[in-house]
Image (cartoon, rainbow, N blue to C red; front, top):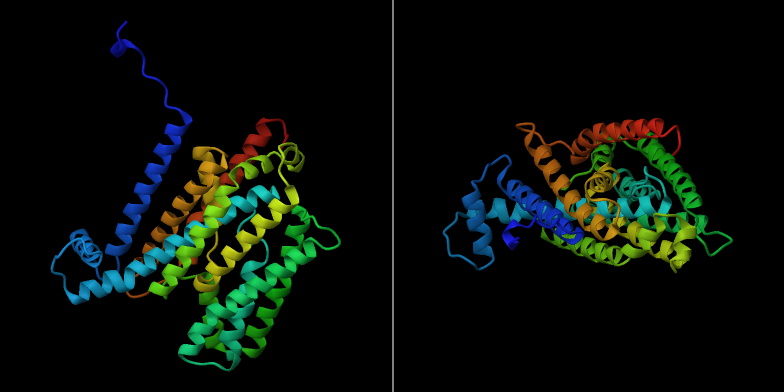
Length: 362
C-alpha cells in the first residue's frame, strides 16, 4: 500500500484547536471590517482599507479628510473599544463560572455593576460639583471607584474570619452588596433626580461604546490583554477547579490563593470595562457556554476562544445598535440582551432535557 492509499490521519486536538482559533480570528476580522464600513455613512471596503493602510504608513492612497475622520477618528476607536470590552467580559465570565461552580455566573456577579452604578449616579444626578467636560471625565472615574469599593467589600465579607474565599459565600456577598448599591441608586434617582438625570442613568446602565475615543480604546485594549494573559496563564489551575476544590488540591493547586488572585483580576478588569462602557449584559454569561459547546471545557482553548467570540459579538451588536434605526442609536446593552436572552433560555431548556433523560441526576 502506498502512502497515497493510506487513510488520512484524524486531526489532532492541537490541529482542531488551531482551526477553531483561525475561524474565530477570521470572524473577528470580518466583524471589525463591517464595523468600520457600516453606519449612518456607509464606507466601501476599499476606502476603509485605504484609510487604514495610509494611517499605518503602508500606502499612499488619496483619501478625503471626511473619510479619514469617519473611519480612523470615530469608528476605529469605537470598534476597538467594543472588541476589548466584549473580549474582557467573556473571559471574566468563563473564569467566574469555573471558580464559583455556577453556570449562571457572569462578570457582574460580585456587585461590580451596581457598585459602578453608584459612582455613575453620583456624578449624573448629584453632579459632585463638576459640569461640562469635567463631568464627562469624572463619570468613568467615579464608576471605577464605585466598582472597586464594591469589590473590596464583597471580598472582605466573603473572606471574613478566614483566609479562604468560598465560592458560595462570595456569591452571597456579591448579591448583598449589589442590593445595597441598587437601593442607593434607586433612592438617588427617584428622590433627588429629575427626568433628565433619570434618562442619563438609564442610558448608562444599558451600556454604550459610542463615546470611545483613541485614549479610551487603548486603555480598554491594554487592560483586557493584560487581564486575559494572566487568566490564560492559570488555565491548568482552572481545569483542576472544574472538578471541584478537592480535586484541585489533589492536583497541587493552592485553592485559596488561586481563587483570590483570579477573582480579584476578573473584578478589576470588569470594573475598568464597566467604568467606560456602562453595564453590558449577557456577553460574559452566554459566550463561555457557546464556546464550551463547540470547543469543550479546556481553559487553554476556552479562554482565547471566549475572548475572540466575545469581541465579535459586541462589535456586531454595536453595528446593529447604530444602524437598526435610521436616525437614532440604541444602547448596545439592548442588542446583547435581545441576542443573549433567547439563547440562554434555549440553553436552560436543553440542560433541563439532558437532566431529565439522565433520570434527574445533575
